[in-house]
Image (cartoon, rainbow, N blue to C red; front, top):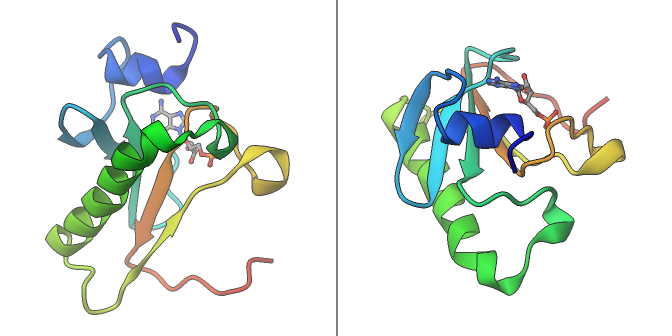
Length: 114
Ligand code: AMP
């Protein structure tokens, strides 16, 4: 999707602080962090929202969650934990329509959200 900002990051057309990349997934720092650790994990395949997932995407979704876990360990979040969030469409607060998980940590997050 040429107009998608995250596809542009994948294609290195715009810069990002890339933390991890393999054939299927990429992780980079959020440009507007809400926590000392705020990383976005995205599939390289353009998928607009969680509603657009099919069973063909189960492997890449698994890779995203496993990558989040590996990065959380690498970043020293094992003791205190972290939050992994996927916002979906308007009520979920999604602003970029290329699915992503937010990995946020090194601060406390209340539940439920306000
Ligand atoms: P969401 O609101 O869940 O769709 O999250 C989109 C996130 O993408 C926000 O936290 C933005 O700060 C972040 N974001 C938007 N553009 C960029 C960019 N060019 N590089 C890094 N993060 C971005």
